[in-house]
Length: 108
Length: 115
Image 1: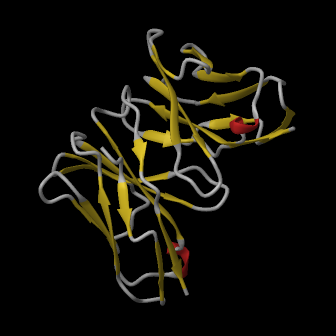
Image 2: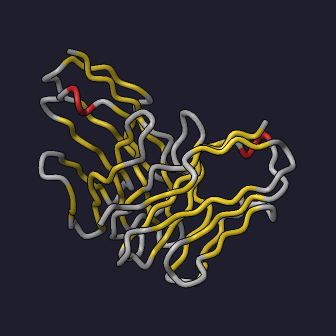
């Protein structure tokens, strides 16, 4: 079952912060975050594993609430290069499924 | 390593024709995934391989779709009797381990347009 992402879209000014949320109705083993720029392939940002381990980009932070099956991606002091669509991917032990995406636009 | 490559990058075909796409993963990656992505949506899982074995296939994948990875290296995705609804970006990804704890590296995709 596809995870739910919120918001669907967000517009920021350079330097502002944003939070993107991802939630699932299933118990999760891990949550992945990817960013896709227009016309390009998705690029890996971070994995959050059940049990608290994280692997990923040093400048991006995220949390994973295992009890609520929710993850949040924190983008601080946003830069123009952060613009793109952010996808979470959830692994429940049987299926790996991407969410519908959150479109982030950072304006100068 | 040059990353995941896909060929062709664009394919325009007429309804009813067969098409085949190729994916070359990162050389040491034993896992290979195929996804389909339409405008404004996330990548939709189609199938995945561990080495040459096809471990999982989406229920959304009709019998017109078939994928192979004959020697555990490159993979092909064939769509028979294409329909207009098959128009999408077809993405290939590879990884060194299972999806629960290994990142996937995506190729640039093959954009299919069915007229």
